[in-house]
View 1: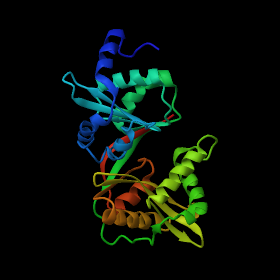
View 2: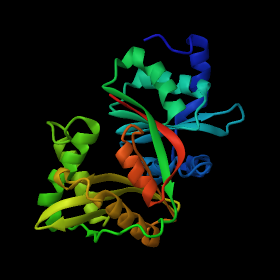
View 3: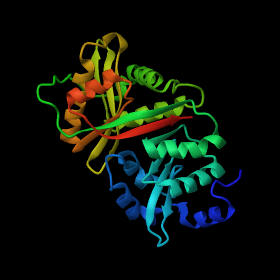
Length: 289
């Protein structure tokens, strides 16, 4: 594959781009902390991803004086961090050479879409491009919003919880996480969240009718994910009441600010989140491979 930057520029870029290590942790955290709301997920991964035995990694782009200016998280997802056109060219050049296994590119819209435009000729047509995903934040629940009785899920809930999680994922992403080759890792992730007491449910007659998860926690922030209402129970206000209950609990016990992102075309979900007290902070995009 011909280098995106050209041979001479590619060599120069190689001197400014490298995999980050524990010695870069302070510089990386400082970069991420420039907008911790946007960077909640990568902030939560710094400690484990810079460990020498981690399968995931951060890559850094440095200026001529050796200062970290941009980064890229490379795990199950690719996440560009404070990138500009030049650093994205360098990251794309390296990614095309490495051909890492990742299922999506996620992050601020302009960065994601430009990075993907560089990767697509080598990586092929994506399965889906979601280019308008408001990143919403909430630090205070709107007064008068009902709270659904919720509790933290336990291991005993797994027989009912796992099908609910699979249903939510399939509905949102368009493929089942229980397909061959991914089922075990997905189930392990759900169990990990349950063990960490970060899955919340409302149960009626043994059936989970509402669930939500706190996926990432870092620097006084947390990222809400996996909000789901059983299809036959939709339209009854369970989504807003359940979300309000989870956010209320998170703000009291986990973080000062709760964030989430959703597709703007999902007007029902956006309306629900705004009714609880969320407002728009940024616009994300997701490219599904």
